[in-house]
Image (cartoon, rainbow, N blue to C red; front, side):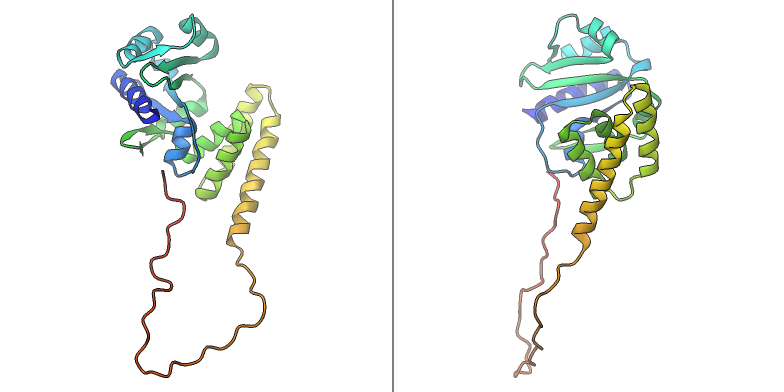
Amino acid sequence: MLERAFSALAGALGRTGVPFMVIGGVAVIAHGVKRLTTDVDAVVQGGAVDVPALLRALARAGIASRIEHVERFARENLVLLMRHVETGVELDVSLGFTRFELEALASRKLVRFGRARAPMARPEDLVIFKALAGRPKDIDDATALLILYRDIDVARVRERVAELAMLAEAPELIDGLEAVIARAGSLRRSRTVPAKRSGRSKPRKKAASSTPRKTKRGLGARKRGARR
């Protein structure tokens, strides 16, 4: 169901020609984090979209509003609260105007989710979105992304979160981000420290036969962190 709703939303937004990207749980999963989600979140470039025209495009794809007065709500809160009629999956389409959102839209990448592909926010920008949301599951997502993607520019993440936290008059988000960064670093270090062996290892005895015995040990190492 989720994949059908994702495909419908991505297709409808793509046909409008307005820059958009998928964020939220779907994007986190597509970037390799193992977790579940039941909805789809996207951002469109606010200055390039006509809301009534966007609603008509979504309606043609079987996507309807899940609240009354959806246009007025979108003007006041910069988000369209929608639902994929066939599956019942909830879809949130945000109107992006901030410097950060425009940067994220400009650097979005085409990523596969199931059998469909759509533009998605980069892991670095997802960390910023998640730090600003600040719910427990968002904190877990941001931590997992920082562990998976060691090339994330943490200085930029700090800068953008600080800017947006000040705009939202929520300075506690800065402390929340620092806790996430510290947690990710601690977990990363704990995974790279080799386990200590107890006792002394016995020296190996040479094989009596000159023909080496075949073994499967060490062959075909498992791949960790496969994407769903």
